[in-house]
Amino acid sequence: MSNRVETDVVIIGAGPVGLFAVFELGLLGLNAHVLDVLDKPGGQCAELYPEKPIYDIPAWPVISGKDLTDRLLEQIKPFLPTFHFNDLVTGIEGSVEKGFTLSTECGKTFFTKVVVIAAGGGSFQPKRPSIPGIAGFNGTSVFYAVRERETFRGKDLLIVGGGDSALDWCLNLQPIAKRVTLVHRRDNFRAVPNSVSKMKTLVRQGKMDFIVGQVSKLCGTGGQLQSAVIKTKEDAIEMTCDRLLPFFGLTMKLGPVSDWDLELDGNQIKVDTATFSTSKPGIFSIGDINTYPGKLKLILSGFHEGALMAHAAKALTHPEERVVLQYTTSSKNLHKKLGVA
Image 1 (cartoon, rainbow, N blue to C red):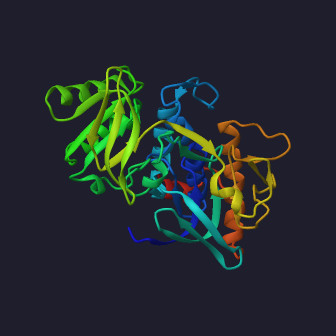
Image 2: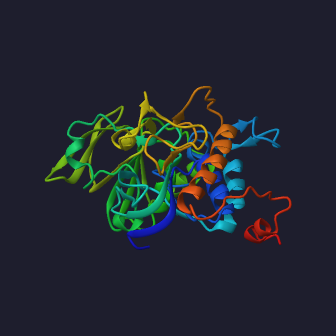
């Protein structure tokens, strides 16, 4: 995909509220690109509690975070949204009159009429290990997410962690890396059992290594990693590696949003409840990241906010058109958009 994108709407956040916003915008004929710092849709539901039951989604007595995400993705298929994962919006410039330009950490540029911030509690940021001198290797030899698999081809790769991300990337990168070594402080894992079983099979077959221990020291010069010292119960092992992927979990931070000159209340964005516009016209905010009198941090509240936002966005982007409320039960126009005519 080109690094320059033009679209009607950019949605920041691919959680349930951001996904439902695609649907509401699509009904009104607005196309959306969706960005998320995570590597998949679903936001907190998919990342923090994919199997945890949710009991307050209308018409679903109980549904898991993963199933809710899957159903929302199915619902928005007719509107062909474009997703950009593993990327972070770092800057927004422009105005409602001229449009907005968004820049991202991966070097993409988006030109859009409307911006919708649906980033939950903020952006997920990786927890960084307290290894002496690690900052000098960040971005050159040490990475906290895999943006492109090919950058690890032929590398001596050290992966640290015991969760799903660590195990998933062991399995995904093992076929292309020169060697993969997994390090975890114990022989018990938080990852799904199937992934753990596959990893241990690869170790038994001699196709990768697993060490119970912790990385205590990194060695190298000029940002280029050459080896790492791993402290075990019995000894300290120095092993060759030129790439390190630490997966120590995620923490929630407001992130770059705090620099976008929006009116905030603590770590939340203040909005007008008639439109869910922020203090800057053309930039809307829905879901847990916004605040207003009587705010309830519920997914169903975010769905309501997305519907009102979409109608306001349509009026803003097409002032010459009269925005008419249509019902999906009876509108032939909406049936055609949904592919059920």
